Length: 441
Image 1 (cartoon, one colour):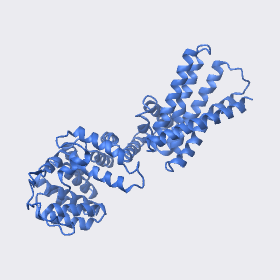
Image 2 (cartoon, rainbow, N blue to C red; image 1 turned 180 degrees about the horizontal axis):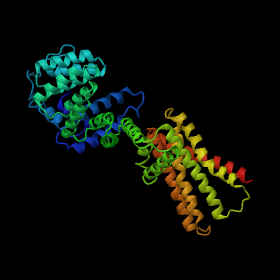
Image 3 (cartoon, rainbow, N blue to C red; image 1 turned 30 degrees about the vertical axis):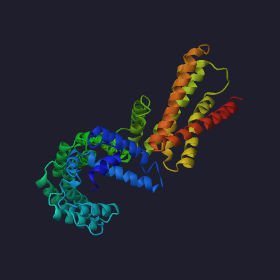
Image 4 (cartoon, one colour; image 1 turned 90 degrees about the vertical axis):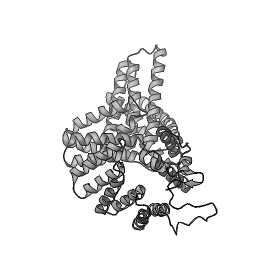
């Protein structure tokens, strides 16, 4: 563990900072240095690792209280067992002598996945300082990674003899008990972890998994929903999607719908989440769907939009002699164009993601334009003062949906998302105008 003042300075906050200020500082820095936003940048990756370690300590009340006891006072550390003077040379990590130095070397070995030797360092740190809770926790974590569940339980009991309110110890006790097949005792441990820290997403998630194994569906869904929300607020979107996927599996087993009923339900739920809140509801709407369901929902929206354009054609009485199927095909052009151009832009600028995402984004983005066309159908063409604002509203909603889709669903940077949306709109306008003109003439 680094010196306390380094953690505060790493996050750029004072030692009297509140939890809220620490979280805000971490989110700001994480967004700046996240590896996904800075690919192939070792400096940013190292910086992100540092701020994550600082946040892990300072955001936990118990860890922070223990850590603050080590803050230097007049050049000395409160809990240092062996005091050093400025004239003493700093010992190298290859020859640690104090508990803290063994802990630091163990942390470095943990980062290189040298778990067994890391355990040896944490063990030596505990021998030198039998009440070094952080060393117990790290050794507990390493033992769990190596499958030594009995060792994990032993470490947890040692921690409880020092401090019975360490949430992470109860969490690892639950993980070990679950791995050994003791599901109900595992739930008890997860519950104790949550009692000490009610914002512990992993504890909620694995308690939900344990309830799922016991076929207590309501409790499992409740815990997994809580875990998903906590993961989302911490921008851990992978864990967020994993939680919703498990919820979807439980719901599917609990309520067996027909294929059509399931499609209608998914379409309506997606509409309620994304249409009324495109900035914050699009990701939850997509995350609850499988790839196949996302394809189905996006395609359904595309077909619905084409029907809206057909209705608009008859409502406005445009003097064009075309069959219904021809009008329907014209109505499908914007959706298909969005799918094709979106796939091309994603491949050229991002090279990640799946076709189902392109279909889903295209479908949700085209719906506002389709609904706008229906509204225009109720208005006389002479009422330009109403038609123009309605069209601009639908167009703006489409732009916002596209931007949110590429920045959140594909985790593309804001700059790239803006470029993709701008290029897509230019390309689609040209394609739609060209194809529709050929149909009409």
